[in-house]
Image (tube, rainbow, N blue to C red; front, side, top):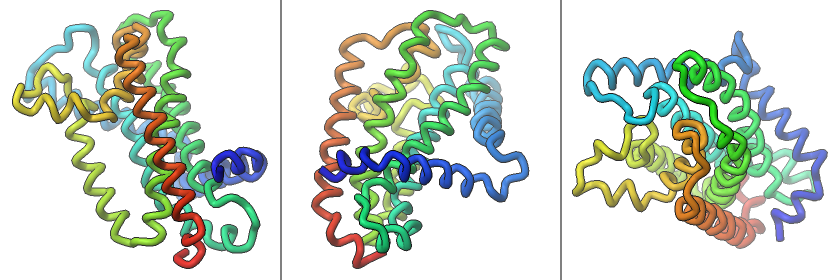
Amino acid sequence: MNLHRSLRYTDLVLYLVARNLKVRYRRSSIGFAWTMLQPLLTMLVLQAVFSAVFRFEMEHGSYAVYALAGILFWNFFSQSVVTSMNSLKANAGLLTKLPVPKAVFPLATVLAGVVNLALALVPLLVIVLIAHHPLRPALLFLPVSVVIATLFTLGIGLLLSPLAAIFVDVIEIVNVALTMGLYLTPVFYPMSIVPKKYLWAVRFNPLRSVMEVFRDPIFYGKVPPLSHLAVAMAAALVALAVGILAFRYNSDRIAFYV
């Protein structure tokens, strides 16, 4: 299995993770701080819009905490998927010269996304304290939620990265799909405001299940219900299995297109 072989190249993966992080913030004057400021600024805009225009209150706590938790998850997922799609062509020199599994490149981009997510949890903690949102023991479950989100994202990244290398239009199609996915996933709105006739589109969105497992310990202060956890874990494992199979199937063709 290509991914299993990739795990043997720990030093290379760690080097690629560090390089991805440095490249991402090389031209930024505030560097890694942007990982914390960007979702915070987005949350402030959403807070102003939803409180002033839509005028609704969250039943279980601060909207700022609810929105920021969703934004952090979405940024991790969408940015990791996009960078995974570009990872093979971006590393064409290494890919064609070194006898290493090609899966190390999308794997490293997703792991770099995990580092960014960990840094972005800092402003989330600040907002939780400012909003006097309760900190509950369920937060200790958050690493499990991150693992599930990582497996799901890695699966999507492995599925799309060879396709993006072979078919240029895939990147544009996925960018449109991510925009649609943002609105079909309750990132910044509660499911309670979704009209009943459209509720099915949100309810059967696998991203919603994975995101709720991430948000539950933060916003609701609870370990996700077993039913939600099972659906999210199933979605993550299916995505990973499909991604591995698709990457393995297209692996031999990648070198001809990068």
